[in-house]
Image (cartoon, rainbow, N blue to C red):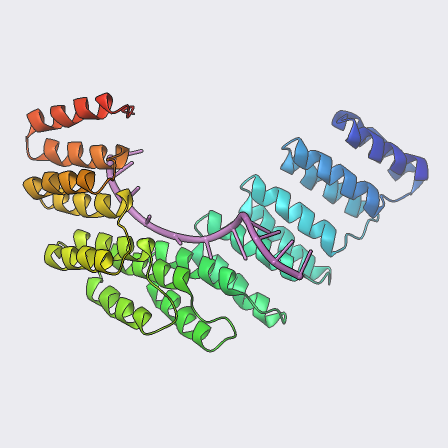
Length: 315
RNA sequence: CCCCCACUAUUG
């Protein structure tokens, strides 16, 4: 059996994955078991070869052959599955881990939460954060932020707000990123006045608004066609010494364009240039799209050419 | 130990 484990180790290192099943068969006949060290090496190799499902298969077979994976092995498998985008499968493995009385670590939860965040599964991410706390671990500010942002992106503002309030009671109060994430979510939902209130609240805290903060707010106001307010915010940021960047301008240009205010949008492009910001693909695509919608094909064409002259490749 | 990294903004 030791020899078989040694072979698994070697075959994995040599990426001779096809031969591994034969070794497992041999082990099975002999009634031997796969040891954790060999399994770990095999999983790592499958990972490097981008074969997470094969890693999963190997994991199962090893369990059948008497291997009792520890937390680190489960974590490794989870990591591979998430890398491959198999978050549902990863979650099943997590449940099996609990069934096996294998204690998840903080890292396990971190993997699960960030994995589901990648998949835009805000509800799952939030649930797993609950389980994390239940298991006695304290989520840090990055974990909270990731979950809040994800909830915001899927429209679960109720839960996002609740977690935000919870955070204030913890050792990790909301930071700049937390506020920015929520401001962004509120803006996307058209809740611009709540966004303004949150912005006011932010200024009462240690968190300093940055260019992202202002851009989120301006984007929300622009979508809601609150252009006067948006321009006020743009001026405010400049007064405070925060330089708008292309994203900031693009947010407002896009809002103006969508509202059919193309003269103003074009004027803002000029402002943008005079402030040393170079229009980019976002600027041009947004303008061209809005100009097209109102039939100003000639202006759209001009911008298209300007775009090419500036070295922006239309895509 | 520190740093870094991991969480946040704009078009189609």
